[in-house]
Image 1 (cartoon, protein in one colour):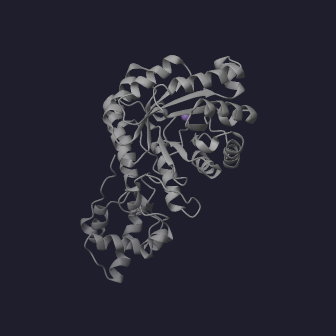
Image 2 (cartoon, helix red, strand yellow):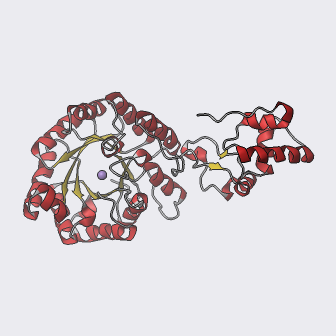
Image 3 (cartoon, helix red, strand yellow):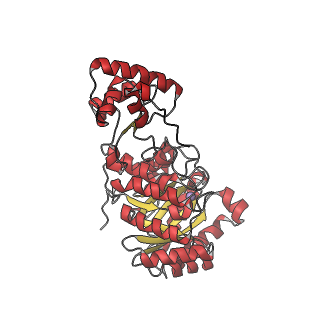
Length: 393
Ligand code: MN
């Protein structure tokens, strides 16, 4: 029996994430990430798109073979050869899934696929049945759901459920929806699709308007119990909903989202760091939860508050997401309290008069220099010996 309050985390870092510019990973890097994602506690790991290339097939197969303790999925279009490739690639895994998709919007059906709505429905039924010959866990996605005629969306999902799909993903493929609208789509599907109560509904949101995480959370409110997401929010165009942000929102705002998950929060930061090593860029410094500045404070008022009680300016501790310690950055906005605190950590307790003097020299230096290092601070104690440490390049 499924726990109705558990949120299933479906990670697509190695599929949607990997197919975006600058995010290509080698075989060994994919395997390393897959082990880490399993340790992080993701329930389903979308390892790739088996038909896309020999490399993708080999990666999905190797992950299915090696990575125990998570469900391994491959993506497939509604094509016989795609489903065959996905089915063969995931075969070594103890638990696996085929994730098939077909566009549901008229825009995609007419211009991209050049098929009628009726032909689309036939393909869905046939493809779900074919996938079920490889595994009893079949996910079906209505691509571009949020720009689909709601009547037809209900019809296509009904066909997929009747054919035996066990998870229905309703992706916001192009990052177009808003939280209220997306929540309403889930409520409509739950209400109007016969048998919807027997399948897991899933979100898959893109960040083109910066709402991917908000939309995912709205989907949960509407009845979704699976979220598709990626580490650091990598993915097509502006990226996917960031796994670490959804997990942190569920943790910090449990009052709003009374759900459980298998995510081990303290593994979030190390996983983000590992991904940055595997691809060509890391998280932006101001990225929520895992950015270098996510737990850094420079202004005097904030530093004073943080030293008095971290709850004043932090809604979660860095340790809770595996990010080490809060970083009080000393710069021109910092005050005496933070300077005295740092000096004490460096082994120097100053009198009030000494601190005033050193603080004066500190503000002069901070006006000239963007990054103040501990060596600079120590240098301020003995002005005649002060050597300004050059900024690291
Ligand atoms: Mn996507």
